[in-house]
Image (tube, rainbow, N blue to C red):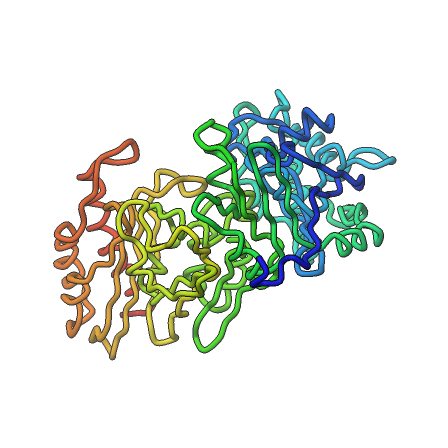
Length: 486
């Protein structure tokens, strides 16, 4: 390890977080447990419920403020059922037990009671926590809680008996002037504690090892073929809960500051491996509203507050919502290992279903993609049975350059229609040099089936996916012509 001077690094062997203001230190194999499980059975906090164990229902919602890059981030809602304990290192955590104070229920809890927002009550703690995160954000932004905003924040919470109308009424009735910020749990002493603990972590036992380095050099030294990199764990956490995967050698990059940044340079966006989808969505609102909009319906707030773009890319699902966009934006995957770094075009990155041009010892550190220019038209579509909290059936990305009404350049990609996301090179060629007309898009939509090979599964038949692909090309024309007056 002397190559990177790691013998001089100070190593910590515990996970530290603050729960409702109380300092908690966890060691050994307990650091691998799902956080909701640890709350209920080790810390006597049964208010956080475990129902789906998949991050879908929201009953396990808690609020977390992470200490990253030397400062404490704002409180955000996450699913604690799929988050390992170690992922909450150096964080302030507030559960439903921490909402009330010595004067009684919080203003959010009172609103829930006043509007009859609960019946059986099992989902209520999760709703109240998600609603508290909503109230916190609205106070910070100095904006009112609207029904639309409440729906967006509560898409990750399911109720099977009350119905959502009284819950939404509770949200919009909250008096933001009465909200007591969760930062009341954040003391100067706790922040000083986090600063003193901002070093690498290594926790090991007879059959597991967790590494949480603070530098890329250290991470590259640690990474080996049998080491699993964990980012938000929004996918792996589900597999672990279903006994389909076990954590043995873990590399978590959460404490590496340079991986937590979104940078815009020379018309490109550079996204670090630890940038969450929520962070990316906020960053793209000004630079690429279309991309930000597809991220808005990517998943629930609880998932997006933990999930990462790099995780979505490396997971390599053919129905991943971000990959079609990246396929047409000249994206480059940046990797690092002890042998050095590589830059791989995303069009060369996917070799087959879940097969990547990624060596066992390599780490994906960044994803770089071009921001669509002002003279380019960028369109992204996600077709799914439900608008929110649903897996895509077919995804579409299109980028068009026009000179008057003449199409001078086209890039198109489809997801959910083969073992990998497909760049439609032959279809693209047919658009070049043609007039932007409805007739052209209708005619060329029938060529989609020549480049895709969808399968039938529970979410849709082959025939359904073929028809979706055809119709998304037509939809592309309709939206562009309406929006741009073409």
